[in-house]
Structures are given as structure tokens and as C-alpha cells.
Image (cartoon, rainbow, N blue to C red):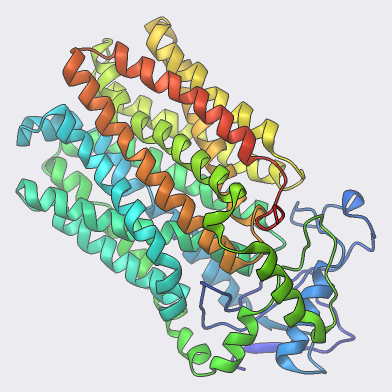
Amino acid sequence: MKQSTIVPKHEKPADALYRSDSETGTGTGSEHISTAPPNGNEHPQNALPSKGGETSLPGVDKALSGANAALLGEGAETALPRGAAATLLIVAVLLTASTLRSPITGVGSLIGEIQGSTGLSHTMSGMLTTLPLLAFAVFALAAPKLSSRFGAERTLFYCMILMSAGILLRSFPGIPALFGGTALIGSAIAIANVLVPSIIKRDFPLRLGLMTALYTSLMNMWSAIASGISMPLSRTALGWRGALACWLILSAATALVWLPLARRHSAMSKNPRKAAAVAALPDPLSDHGQHRDANPGTAKADSDRSSKRSGSVWRSPIAWRVTLFMGFQSIMFYVGVSWLPEILHEQGMSMDQAGWMLSLMQLSSMSGAFLMPLLAARMQSQKELSAASAALFLVGFGGIWLGPPSLALLFILLIGLGSGTTFSLVIMFFALRSRTAGQAAQLSGMAQSIGYLLSAVGPTLFGFIHDQTGGWSMPLATITGMSLITIVFGYAAGRKDRIGSEV
């Protein structure tokens, strides 16, 4: 095995975080599993926090090392990559997070400029945000199959190339180029949205909360930056097209980071027997946090039992609860990104001020996006957290609708906090409600496909209601009512079940 350090059975690594194996739906070129030292506690509820701030459940390292022994043979318990490989993967994941919203959220603060330049109606302008969501819905289902065929790393490299092409096309004159480039961007983001959470579950099983927190926080941070700087950039010689084209730099840089990781896929693809063996590995944790038998001889049987219990995610009530929560919280976010600047402008703010308010909304989401996964990872049930997070939308949009304009900043911050907390919870649920990284990819694909199809209605419907009524009161009343539905599905998705426990 290339560039690996073999640790004998009697030498446990002191602080190994990284696990990179090809699992169902997330093919990869790396062949490494590492574990963290056990706490020596027999009961999950008494598990001690580990060095990284996560709760280390007893038996996880034993199960992972046993599975690794089954792959590598006796005499090798853990195969660790060199530090550069793990660091490069972390950098790639976090850079990818920076590209998954910024090419879209920058459009919201430029809607007025785009309408003035192209003559688009409010309904058609809403399509600039709705079109990526439709692409999310269509291409999210293809992500696990593409990953299985090409490898997760290689697929993500192709996604960044496709995104770069879309950003470039969108900057060309003409409405067809505007919508065509937007569609390409949405397609690339759709696939990356599905694969990154499954990579986090696969490669960082003991640091789900921390990695999810970093991933969602950076996504929100760059989303906020895009909203804040797009309008000032458009007032330079760049214009609004040049302002949107600036994000080509970020997507191209991310593609370069994925390139060496993508090349490593060829090593695993040349050894299908070993890839299949890794794909059969079960999740080290059972439904209640107890460890599975770490005996290599039982790994296949555990996988078979897990598959029989799990069945198709499409038939799972748990998966549908997560999917609907995903859809309605996405409606809240994308309606806010698309139309809040216009609403605030009509309430008396300049477009520059409204753009920065949108930026503040997304900056406020960072704190919730970072802290919520760390908190959720320590709890068996997240139903109260989910409901409370969704309730922030109710107060925020209700305040924009009925409250005084002088409190607009408070309401905007509440919407942002709700967006960050609910989105990070959904990403956590892909891992917490599934049994394997492959199943996490399937759940992620289902939730993002159906969820974004549902959320695609939001911005266009919002603009359509405005065109029909001539004001923002009815659209705001509609989104406030939808926030109540989000609370219900958030509470349901937060229950501690896993897919397959219904059987």
C-alpha cells in the first residue's frame, strides 16, 4: 500500500482521526482506517469527551480496527495515511464548502441590477435562484451512482470543473448564457452537496460534529461574503456580470486541490476485490451506540443484517422526515436570499445597505452552523433542538412582515441563525439517521433531490405572489405560515431513530 504507515497490533495510535475507505456509493482511491483510543467506558451514556471535543463511544476503535484487520490481514491493525494526505482531504472538503452557496447567493443582492439590465420580471428573476434548486433535485439522485463509478474524489474534481464552466458562461452577455450558466452551476453544486457529507461520515467517523461544524460554517461564511461584496463589485468596471464571474477563482482553486486526491482513485479501482470488501463494512455503531463484534469474521454478517434492516431509504419514514425538513428549511433560506434585499429596499434601505443586511443574515448563521453540530453530536435525540431552530424562522419572517422596520436587523439575524442551525442539523441527520457511508449518500441524495425540488417552489412562488398582489405582505404571510410546517418536520426529523429501525 502506497504512502502508508502500518501500526502493529500492540501499538495503538494516540490520536488518529482519519478513515478513508471506499464504501457503498462513495468510491475512493484511499485505503486507510484509523481510530481514536478508547475511553475504557462500557456505557455510551458515560462516554468521555475526546481530545477534539467529540464524544468517543466505547468500542468504535475496536470495531474499526477489526474491520481493517479483515482487509489487511493479521499483523496490521491500523493503516494510517501520511499527514499530508489527511490534511489535503480536509482542505479539499472545506474549500468545497466555500463554493456551494457563494455562486448563487451573490445573485440575490444583484436582482435589481439584473432586472434593469435584462428586463426580467420578478417571476423570471426568481428563476435565477429556483433553477439551481431544480438542478439540485435532478442531479442529487445521480451523485451516488457517479461516485460509485468514478470515485467520490474524482467526481468532486469534475464538479468543480463543471462549476467553473458555469460561472464563466453566466458572465457572457445574453439571457440564454445567464440561465445556462446558472443551470451548470446548480448541477455541480447538487452532486457536491450529496458527496461531501458522506465523505465526512466515511473518513471522519469519530469527528462528525466537528467536521460538519467546520463545513457548514465555511459554507455560510462564504455565502455571506458573496452577498456583501457583490453589489460593491458591480459598481466598479466589472459590472454585475463581472461581479458574479469573480467566483471562478474559488471554484478553479478547489478543483486543483481535488486533482491529486482524484488521481489516487486508480489504485483502488485496480483492486475490485478489496474495494468490494470495504464496501461491505458495517457502521461500527449499532442503533443504541453499542459496538458491534470487532471479530473480522463477523463483519460480513453484520453488513448483511444491516442491509436487511435498512432496506431502501425511499421506503423509510425516517428518511422522509429528514427529507421534508430539508425541503422546508431550504425554502426559508432561498426565499430570504432571493427577496429580502428587495423587501428591505422597499422599506426604505438603499440597495447597498440591503445587500449588507443579507450578508449579516448569513454571517449570523455561522455561529449556529458551527455550534449546533457539536451540541447535536452529544445528544441521542435532537427533536427539541430542531423545533427550536425552525422557530427562529417564525419570529424572523413574522417580524419582517408585521414588526417595525427599526427592528429589521434583529429579525434578519434571527432568520440567519435559524438558517445556520437547521441546515447543519440536516447535514448531521444524513450521518446520524444512517448506518453506513453508502446509506448516508443515499439519504443525502434523496433528501436533497426531493427537498430542493420542494424548495424550488419558494423563490418563484414568492415573486409570483408579489406580481399578483403588488406588495410584499401576502408573500411574507405565506413564508411565515411555511415556517410553522418547518417546525413540525424539524421535530419529527430530530427523533433518535435510524433507517431500518422501523422494521
